[in-house]
Picture 1: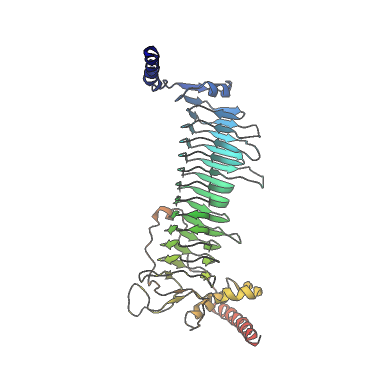
Picture 2 (picture 1 turned 45 degrees about the vertical axis):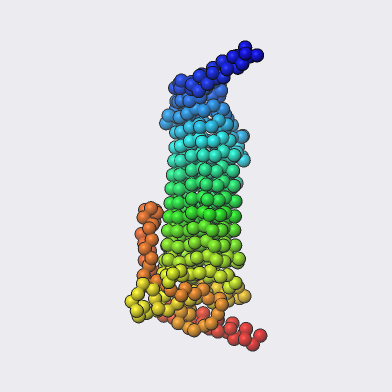
Length: 454
């Protein structure tokens, strides 16, 4: 019995003594004439594998904790089927590679592991750029990613599926389906990315406690598409020229208890759109030169919307009449550049409430042909007149404490992406403006008169 115990203790001591000693790291240089997959298979933990310039053809798999670093011109060229590079091991570094030619539904890099570093790679001519599935703590930074060059069916530049604690920073993506898609992935940071020409620049689904900060997104359908997500921090993003017919800077759908602060929404179809968005904080945002500043769709209640600057939007704010949201807090509302009331008391807020001027919007719901006037000088003048007309209607959004001057917004982190501040809107000759206003007023009065007789 004592002999058996002694043997067990010796085995345990041996494991403790030698098991914790890491194998000495080696640096391995690889040329295109070498069997690259065989070298990967023989690699030991902590080896540094340096790829010389050239094309390495095939699909490759990493099963060991290694650093894979390419010299300038080192390219992994897939077979056109499957994922180009699959990572099964934890704590792998992939850096300075060009990766191309993945399968029709596959990725340039596919991660199935944890705490990897994917840095400074160029990924072209693939469906998805980088996919992380069931892996936590991965860092994806400073990569350039685009999808298939000419195909209409494109994948996501970066796709996180059940990948919590991921950090996706400083990447450039172009011409993909979604720039960054976060699905069932909590506690992620998505920051400093430049995303151009995507369906959705950044897309979240069923995710919580995600930080989305200081990203630049333009020429996409929606800059941010936030769906079924909770407790998000969305701040200092620049969302510019997302101008398709449904284009939105920030779309909040089934989004709850999130903070949207210090973002710039400029030249989009809609600056912000809410649908089934509940108890979110929207403050200190610059909402400028959009067709619609904020549109609040159905089932969006309990949102706090204040200390935002609404500047040169064709329609500042429109809302489903059943919604109940707050446009001022603690005596401070929003800045509306078309607020015409005189600030008699010379305080930080104007003495008279701001009304949204969205009667025209509600008329178009019943009279679709009126939409031809959307964006016209006549509508702008009509909205201005509504500020002074004592119309009692639950279709108005009312800001009880509008700001006399624009709110100070800390947007220095995104201003470098912006073009110069726009001059005032299109300049029309006075008689053309007057003529359009008269025509528009005539149509409105005729419509209202017909509704009374009916």
